[in-house]
Length: 338
Ligand code: PEP
Ligand code: MN
Image (tube, rainbow, N blue to C red):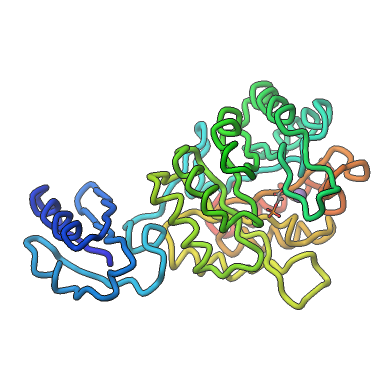
């Protein structure tokens, strides 16, 4: 249930709502806006409680029953779009934020070269996996701590925030010491212990959509982060499993306007994992920007033929530079910029 307090409602009136909820064994989360407070009533029994219980209280203006399982990620909970700020780079505003770099950190030379190239073309955040969740236990799983060290070096050398994946709930604090943004991968979207710890870290987070998960499940997973008081959540559509096998996954382009309608959180798109092939990445990336994405997460490798992971879907630095020029034109046509 979402309770909208009247404009300028007193603290006492808000406290009354909180006390009433607590007396019913329900949790609350407050959104203290500048002129209006919104209270989310949390708990599995809210469905059995009449809205009148709250509507009758002083200075309560509206009580909306949210039939959807997510509450904190719902647009109704916050009257405006969320902006996520990462070391001075804002995600969710007019600027489209491009995060780019290799799938996996492989060596200092590879990472530095990738960072130099993506920065020169206008990317503002460097991506690179130090811990790689792989489908097979026999595949390369990343350089781990050494990879994190290299990411810190690249961040310092190029003045770019870095985004990197965390896979283990117990390793969140360790990864958060090096990462500007924590990435929760598609395979871990419903790893609730991981989400809770990433929420507690209060570090900006890219929450990738599980490739077999609905948008509702995705937003409900985002609630785990928000419930810990971490408001720095960026959603990332990266393609879902369908019957179509000519691409690695099917990018759900409609997820962009659906999320914009349902949620206040920013959404970025990863065209690389959706496409699975470098030749398809530019068209998907342009479409994402045209459809209203707040940013992109793109794999770029200095030498894709030699890449240890995902070389087929990685752009070369020159392909990336060309794509960035195209994206600037698309962004301008939809009233944004890169
Ligand atoms: C990645 O971005 O490196 C990655 C593994 O992506 P996903 O979780 O979307 O498969
Ligand atoms: Mn990859």
